[in-house]
Image (cartoon, rainbow, N blue to C red; front, side):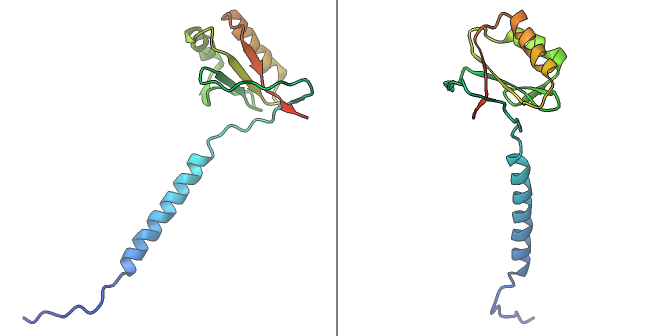
Length: 127
């Protein structure tokens, strides 16, 4: 049996695999990139800057009333238990969407007060 001489290599299957991998990476990167919380902050004229600190605990209330602690969703029932476990000396930073219901904001403040948190900051945007 005589062996055939290879003058060229067929790279079409290699290109197909690379394109499929590229599409998979782009789709995955799109889902990972959209994990931020969309909050439309209210504006205030007397706002001061907050020093960003690793010890800050960020609590976010989005437009529909869902609550997040450091970008992790939490139910209102679990909020009380979670706050009881946190260090009272750490500053609490509240991001509340200006279109969310005021009762959600009051519920959060009441829960923080019941857990004896005193270092609380409310994030606003400058006008």
